[in-house]
Length: 405
Image 1 (cartoon, rainbow, N blue to C red):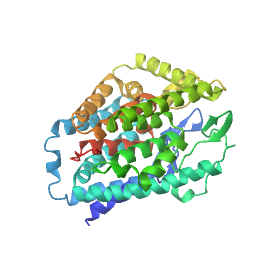
Image 2: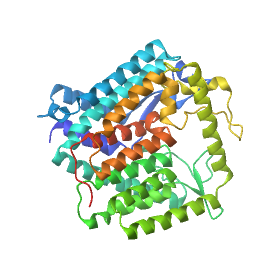
Image 3: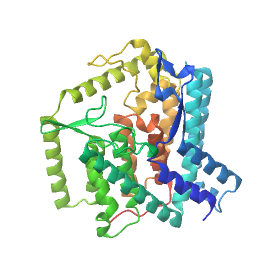
């Protein structure tokens, strides 16, 4: 096994692990508060990815460049977007240091995306990748299920698990028949991120598996249970869409309809004040993003500068907590931070990605990205989210063409 191949598999295995070191220089403070989004952060996965990129640059695998033979337009669009981010950071950003760090991060993941596209296109490496992902999904699912049953974390700090229980302030909860329950986090920063990880992993794991029994294996069963315990509405809905699109039979459609109606009933029947507050906050952030755009339409306020920009509006939640977080829509976030030029280049890249959707599973994967872009920001603002985003893009661009039948 080549060293670069081993590094790639190590990156896949380490996606759930949040090992990192935060540094809070003066530019990472807003209103005197240190902001994690703006901190200079080095993750264990960053070290692995940089080593992987260096290994590929020094000794490219055989036929490495042939994988991109019909993807030149896509590579040019991705390169143009990266170049624009650096230009935008240097000349138009309100906080240049923060924008340059973010631009370097996107460049790192863009190069990783290219490397991942190559490895996922190799049949044997793809099989090994599925085994690695299956292992990480199983232990992550067992952890998530245990967290929900015990209603607390398990103390796995070395793997990046946060310390929390059902009474922890600002922890994610759900209401079941009027009672409050802790949602499963795994080792991710939020249950929604865990839900996205499990969903995308299920898509990759079931590629090239033609047996109907492949649905009933350990990783599929455990990850499905864990997915339910995240109570991530987006992930659960997209999982249902995936099943319907892949198994479009009358019985499956009827069952999916019953589940959807049941899900909608319980969601609406037990909609509590916290959900209403969350919706109100998202509307406020979206409205403010449009206000920021009006004054910075062409070039925006700079990558990763949204929190600095909204701090000037003195926004608070219904519970009177200062709102210092990104808008929950990646398209609005890029428009506000990088202007209309940035949004056009970003959209052009994803339009090019869509042209490589050639299986049902890839179409589901692409739809998952678009839905999360519309409803949340973590694919663009958090380390594990960015890893998931560019790994999913690499999967779509890979030569894997068979879907589950």
